Structure formats: C-alpha cells, structure tokens
Length: 550
Image (cartoon, rainbow, N blue to C red):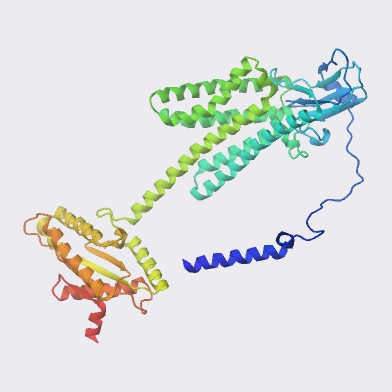
C-alpha cells in the first residue's frame, strides 16, 4: 500500500513538472507572452441570404407590427421570432429583410440564436409596419411568438432562451454517460436502455429547439423539420409513457401487461416510418393523435400513482413527479395559456429534462439495490453459514494480507490452527444438533478473544484458524493457551450431560522461509497434529517442535 502511494505521488509530481515545462506562461508570465491570439484574417464576406419568390410563396402566415401612433421614433428596433418549428421565417421592413430557418444557423442573423431575428432602424416619423411571415404550423397551438424591443434586451432574452435549451441537451448527454458507466459496472440492461433514452432525447430536443442547425447543420433536418418532429413524437412519446408505467409499478401490479405492452409500444414507434410518406395534413393528424394518446396515458399513470400513494406506497412518488409537468402543459394548452405559447420549446425541454432526472433518481436507487445484493452475495460467499465466521477462502485472503503487512512493516505474525478433539464422537453420542452448538460456542469464544472478529476463520468441519497479527513467541502461545481453556469452559456452559469439549492447537510464527500462506499453514497444521498425538487438549509451537526434532 505504501509503495503504491509512493508511485502515485511520484507520477503526479512528474505530470506537474511536464505541465510546467510545456506551458512556461503558466509558471511565469512574460512580456508579450501573456495573451493568445487564434485564427487568421479573412477576406470572406458575411453570408447574405436573399428571400426568393419561391420562399415567400410558402409563407402563408403573416403578421404586421404597426408603428406607434406618432410613427417610429428613429431608434433601432429588434424583432425576434420564436417557436418556429419548421420552414422559413421572413422579417421585412422597408428595404431590409431577412429569411432564415431555425435548423440552419447559417441563414440567420448571428445576433439571434434562439429565434430568427433582425435589427431595423425605421426613420423617425415613419409609419410603415414591420412584416413577419412564416409557414403554416404543424399543429394549431404551435404558433410563433414575435418579440420586439430595444436590441440589447431582445438579444439578452434570446441568449437566455438559448442557454436553457443548451443546458437541457447537456444534462441529457451527461445522464447518458452516467448510465453507460452504470451499465459497464453492473451489466444491467436497464442502464443501457436509459442511456439510449437519453440519446433519443438529445436528438429530439435538438430538432425541437433548432440546435440541430447550430452552429451549422449536423442532422439532415433542413427542409424536413415537420417529418423529423412527427417521427420523434411517434418514437419518444410511447417510450416515455412506457417508462412512466414502469416507474409507477404498473408492470408489478398487472404482470400480464409486461407481455404485450412492449410490443404495443414498439408498434407505436413504428409509426415513425409513416412520417416519411404522409402528406402534411396526415402528419398533423398523426402528431395530434400521438399527443392526445400521450396525455390520456399520462392521466392513467397519474391516477394509478395517486391511488398507490393513498395506500402508503411511497415508490409511486417518482412516477407522479415525472408525469406532472406534461399534464400541466396539457392543461395549459387547453386553456390557451399565453405563457406556454411563448415558451413552448423551453417547457417541453424542461419537462423532458425533469423526467430524465427523476428516472435517473430511480436508476440510482436501483444501482444501490444492486450493490447491496452484490455485497450480500459476496458476504454469503465469504461467510460460514453456521458460525458466521469467514470461511476458508476469505480466511486465506486475510492471512495473505496480514503476511504482506507484517513483511512491509517488519512486524510479527502468529497463527493458531485449532481442531476440536474427538468431534465425531460428540456428534455420535450427543447428536448433530449438539455438535452444531459446540461449533457455534467455540466460534463465539474465539472471536471474543481477539481484537478483530475477522481474524477467526472456520477452515472446515471442526477446524478453526486464529490470526494473531503483531504477536509472536511466548505471547502468542499464552494467548492460545487462554483460548484453549475458554473453549473447554464454553463447552461446559452448554449444559449437555457428559459433554466435554477440548481443543488441540498448533502455533506457527511467520518466518523468512514462509514463501506463502500455504507454507505457514502447513507448519501450524503439523503442530496441531503433534498436539493430537501428544494427548490432545494442548498447544504445540511449530518452532519448538522443530527444535526438539533437530
């Protein structure tokens, strides 16, 4: 252990030295070297994108922002159009116009990233309205929001919305990586499925918010935004509803649903293929049907969660929490709530992020449960069922660790190999139940006589191993003699007529010639057999026995 720590400290020191040598500016700033200039001058002009007649022909929805009663003041006016889920947007005033698409940031004014915007300076007293046009929305409620005002506040508002959208996507990416780490450590397919769900949400949110086109398109969305959105609705909404059903415990209450519900969910996801061929009107109906079905399913999950909560089933709380934001959006949609209309993209993304966070919480509980099960299985694998002592496998590992520690610190280590005398006769005369009671009593006696109960091991049958780190020679022998007497007293305390319990103990102290644990155990075992041959109920030191032979 000390050697490993030394290596880590040494490697860390070399890394810091390498960083200091490769980045001298970090160690001591120098004149002319305390800044960094990147990039290179360019002759490329800012991209100009004109609104062609073909573009304008598709912009069937229009609104005019009239000038104030006294005409425009002559101050700059920023116009930003949000919630454009598909198609072009045109902003026009006088001889200034811009056409842009949310899914291709190269087509938009670089001052606006969450919407399509432009800054105009109408002459003072001018009454010409600012015109905004866009394509017909996919669904009736998914209408755009136009914000007008001074450039700085409008741009700051745009930046804030972009940060919210980006943060939601970043959280989904982080949760996906966490789930992958959980899958690699547990091999539980639930973690892998959750990682795929997060990845799907990243793609869906990117298309929904226009981040798929920022800073330039990285998904082939442009021109097919409607079909992408409907496809993600067909895939994402059934999966979200299925996960909510699992969270609320529906599969546990009705196990039969676990047979057909996955196939039903997969069938709904397959409708995404239809988005490639359906006409626009069909896409709108399909999207509306998916939304309605999702809301009805959410109501069922919520009702079931409340019913379980009334029965004091606290495990239903995550499902209720996960579905609440979606039901709140559905209620606001029915009420034509202006807040939802203005912030629909952010509301959807925040609801998805909240759902993923709640699911991650449940997944974390599952991880804790898996770890507890693993620890319990490991404890069962390393523990003797009858006495509760470490078994032979665990005991040998602990002995090897004690040997490494003793050699590293130049300390002593003694072991006592204990065998209950005539144990077969105890079983034959007094019964196996009495024999088990003897084993349990001996185990309790030995663990009470050492500092760490893990230093007493049941090697098998009636054999026990006692580890005495830091002790050797006469002190170790005295400790084992005391244990031998305590074993006899423990047998007498059982109150079984005619029962006498004694033990033969072989003592061995770690020496240079002990290459491994097996060598030390062989000497202790040999000393224990010498104790048997010498009349039982005694302690024999392997070193003393060897010196006597010599």
